[in-house]
Length: 122
Figure (spheres, rainbow, N blue to C red):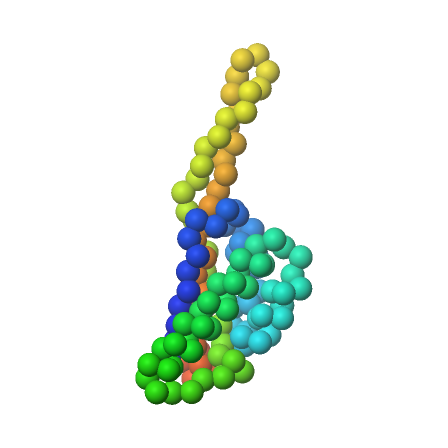
């Protein structure tokens, strides 16, 4: 049994988000949640919310199937960050020029499941 949660259009660059996401991939839910709670990066709060959402989705799926699932049984099977649309903004520069500012967004996905379904990294 596995469950997935996505957050789209998160206002953080994919490169910064991947640094955090790569740290929790393959860990148990409890270890990953602890790591994200104390991580200094701002995106760790968003990833923590997505992780808890995936666990809640897993519990709903388990209830539908008549199963019981504990937090300690869940593992982070897969995590990845895709690039979202980039917002382009302009700032005035010297001699009438315009400097481009790229505000990047990310789509973050977390998949959790039981250890017997554990698979390799994406």
